[in-house]
Every structure is written in structure tokens, then in C-alpha cells.
Length: 124
Image (cartoon, one colour):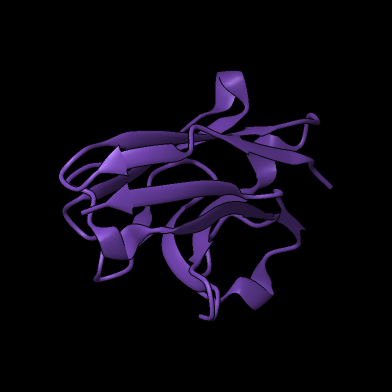
């Protein structure tokens, strides 16, 4: 099990950028594939991006492809989500999640460990 703590959320104007970080505790981070999800008010939690254990494979929701980039730094036990060209519809609480597997998953069901979330608000 890993403990996950997100940071980097905030208020930004449309077209702006933010970088979210997710710091993991524990020595098992390197065995985890990681994902980012988000949940807007009144909506279901949805997949945003994911990265494999080694960082060699990534995947993105169609709505963020070309604008968001997921990466990981195993030396720092941290996964990042660089968000560019933000839109008001990106407003949500963003969560990072981990699953102890070499491969990532798109469904939230497959993730065992979750952070507390960080709020991202994009104004128009």
C-alpha cells in the first residue's frame, strides 16, 4: 500500500497551465502503475491519464489528449500531470491513484490506493 498526496491545484484562467504532483510514500512506488482521475460537481469520476510502472506507456482520455501530459519520477516517488490549454470544462477535483501492477488501467475500479484530491478551477 502507498499513501498518495496531491498538490498543485488552484484557480487559473482558460488557456493557462497547471502542474499537479502526487507524492507517494513507501518503498513500493516503483511497483505501481499510476493514474489521474477527476470528478466535477454532479458528475461521475472519470479517467484522465495513466502511466505504467516503468513510465514507458501512457494513455489519455480523448478530452485531454494533446493538452495534458503524465509523467513520473521514481527517484522522487512522484507522478505529475502537466495541464496546458486549460478549459472551463477541466474544472474538477483531481485525484491520483495507484495500482500494484506493471500495467495501468482506465477504470477506477482497478486502483487500490487514492489520494485526497486537489481542486482545479478554470475560469472563462
